[in-house]
Image 1 (spheres, one colour):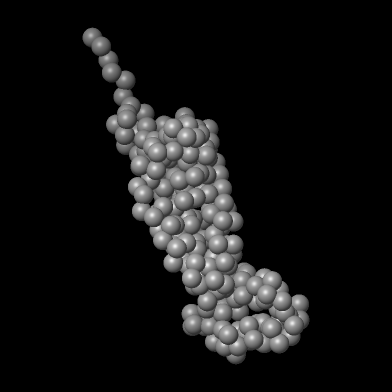
Image 2 (cartoon, one colour; image 1 turned 120 degrees about the vertical axis):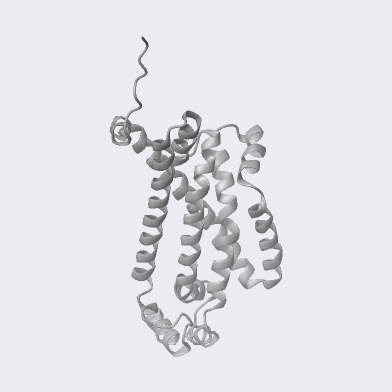
Length: 237
């Protein structure tokens, strides 16, 4: 008589695969952080340029919007003959999907800085570069970080798709679970992805509150007189 071994319980399987789960968690975090960091590094100068030269905003958002509409799986397949089954195949796709979100939010934030605040700073002798880094970007931080939050949560979800090219973090658990018809891996991969997204969003929200203490407990619209006082504080600093 042949006996079929019973599948391990969920807790037994998790205990036996702790090292693998930790490795996939690190991979998921690395892929997400790198994609959002590169996306931010590309989006910030493009956003400043689009803000300063309004005629370029439509073409920039049109191109990044085009990238955003390409299905993630199709984009990875297109990239494989060029970059192979490497981390850069995943990162090029992931970065592409962050650009539209980031650029739109960055430009909205920069446009939301009141004109009287900028005029006050210019009257104090600020150059365009000083105005940007010491007044406009600090006051635009709520919108900037909001864009980073959206891009981060979106990227965390998209990283799971990268499991199809072997670079998927928690998505690898889901893929292996589907291949082996083992619900523990599927549920664990999904739950860990959701938990990571919630934790990342909470951490970025806390970062926003730390970096923008003047924006607490007030309406979302920036009041000119409050913004002017913040500008004066930045100039004094």
